[in-house]
Length: 144
Length: 361
Image (tube, rainbow over all chains, first blue to last red; front, side, top):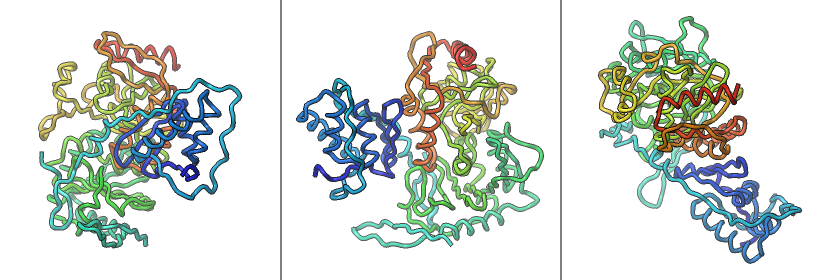
């Protein structure tokens, strides 16, 4: 499993990293998210297609963190992203993945990757304009 | 001939598959529009939206009277060639019937999208909170807008007429719809970006009667320059908001259908203040503080994106992946600030004015 490809659940999920902070939207559910710095760094690799082991290497290269701790956090992080249907895990599809992330000269103190979820848009997308359809298949507006 | 595959979902584990010819369906609806919209009742208006000429041909004056006030600040009197033509009619008064639907009820998705009608050439959707239906042919630059009954047009449609058609078509011209209120001075505007209830409309309305120009309290089209183009000069106020803006009560459009919001047209309130657009020099994320004073501070572009993108993408059935990317490009280009909104409403235009003259010009 550690060599299976991890990718964004596109096209249902869109994300952009601005000022080292990822903003992600699940277009299917209406939920949207932000990631802290380490999470956003990992997201940039997920955008390109990556593997679990490369993500662990990314944390080890960038932060002052032990391998067991990095592994634990990556597993938790990926589980959260998968629960939110933000990523897909494609077995046996590691072709064309970028190389391991570069090692940075000075490592930063570790902050675990963290996903913040916002659900205030879900009401908007679940507004149901359709109450019923007529005999020809045209919807009626819902009468409130 | 463009053929698209649609999955018709039925109860049970097996789905039956059939094909929708979206272009053929457009042609059927277009033929109906031409049957419905005939002289001498037909009336035509031409609008200049973000430097593009949009012509709307209505089946009769009654429908036009409902659908044009929010756009009347963009009306142009001469008659240049239209870049986009919309035909608008109601089925009741024109006694025209729509063709049989070629979709199943469960093909209608959130925001009124219809499976099988979302492609390079043809898009169609039912319009949320209305009985409207819109379909566009991007190749011929024709949009069709049909409602069931012109007499029951909702506040929503009167506030934002043709919002879906215009946004779809504008997107193909590199303009992206944004949910925000734009105000400013001639050479520098700000976009107060946020969903309903964020303080965006209150901020914009607080600017009425000030020295600031007013582009929109809710919707703009953003272009690359970057520039915020206005769309509608309508404002919708919740009844309780009149406590903060009591003078606006006199301007509520009469004879409104039941709605939790009241409709106003801003050119009736401050005629010289409404403008068609402004250069975009800053994004402001509104935050209601409960304190008395208003102030403006730097913030991150990610905060702007969080405030701007979700409600812009979910308000109308735009091509969301493209819109999201364009909004991000815009947010990277334009400086990001937070406006901490105080309870003293007079300070809001004062602070925005000082901010523009002190930091953006």
